[in-house]
Image 1 (cartoon, rainbow over the protein chains, first blue to last red):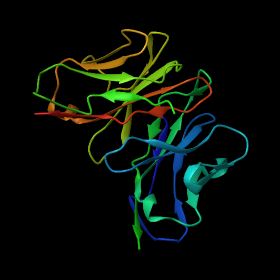
Image 2: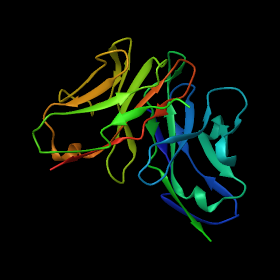
Image 3: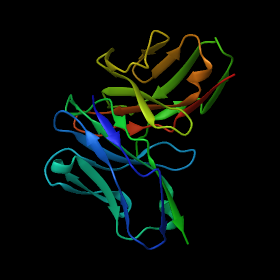
Image 4: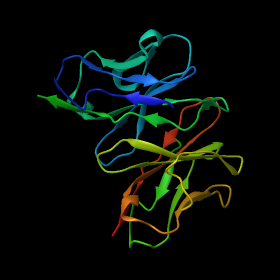
Length: 116
Length: 112
């Protein structure tokens, strides 16, 4: 069965500092990997996705993630965080179906706190 | 920009009552999904729907749940007899073929 582990429940970062959120996945075949962000009371917004090809993917809001098959990881990074980045971040994995990812398995999320 | 919409934003119901949560996926999308998120927990997959039938469902999606695409625009989730533990945020999502899932804003279901 597929699974996603986000080992950090909470992370506190100073504004302007760099950020890395960890994600490890378990999946039997080539995974489709995603990072979503959820602000309080809001839905899920896609930050970036990995389907195939270049293992370093760029997303919105200055985020990037690197797929490392050997480590089964898909860590999210940002060189300089802004106060508006405070939110809940979810890593997700899905299988191939009909040209895209089907039912996604999410991690438990990492709550990002930005210190002024 | 096209978006997935969900109604209502908040539904309060009594235990044992039936509820229907409604979603309008993006118009040219073909694959439809329901997820739920119990307060403070992770998002969980419930069901996927394609070509007017369920393509995949999780163990959460038992006989109390059903989905329907009654017309060309709506996608509904019905819970026949709600339980306290059904209280959660329910997200609808849709996608085309080679694309990621677009999520709606969610419906918060409170079962009393």
